[in-house]
Image (tube, rainbow, N blue to C red; front, side, top):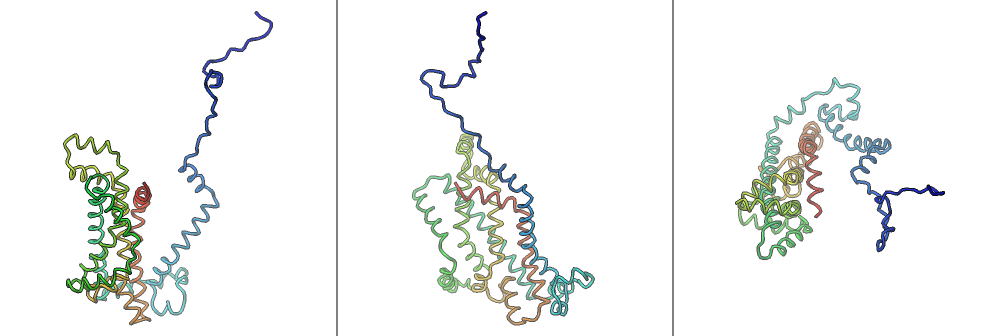
Length: 313
């Protein structure tokens, strides 16, 4: 045995610089994943407290409107809605009974449904077909046409009100529900096509090519493969379009007559003609508000997932 101790080294532990011709490069530190950082940030007690305060501030007007809609007109004129929390026995559904007996309000509610539902179905259906075509079909001028569609996103609605009104007047559509639906469809398609095209373009090309090799046609691929994969984007688009049309008043105020006006216009008319009739306005406003709120919270997961996935490419 020699006088000095020898240290055995594992060849695998020798740094890369020990090998001739190689330069040691320090390995980068592991990157923290964004979801982990977000979860850690949201787990902070202060952040949670701030989020709770924001949620309460957002929900307070809805709760106030709901309690006001269940109070009598005299109670609403005398005290604030928060006093109902200390005396809940004075709350009743009489205002909703009166509201449902108002033929104008009930007709306006169903007009809103007849405008919102067909518009949502048409926009989602047409945009899905166009988004698939722009993403995966080859045809002359595809990129140019898509740029034109994207350019229509910056066109404000107010610019088309007068010329479209004249066009609908010559076609006999002015003042009708189909006219309001067509206007909403036309101005909802650019964003819808942009969203779905970007989402469909993220589908792996190998998956579509494998389907074509198995004998699948374009329609079969679209209906059996693309639509199921694009369900989050389709759901988010449907929710977005429904909320926008349901809450619209500008387009309906101009293009719908008294027989085709939606709930937003009917409530505005009630406020103008009977400003003190709070017993009808409060339950009507809550009815107009609660439907989109319920729809959004029921499908918010699909809404956020679809918008985040299709807004960037």
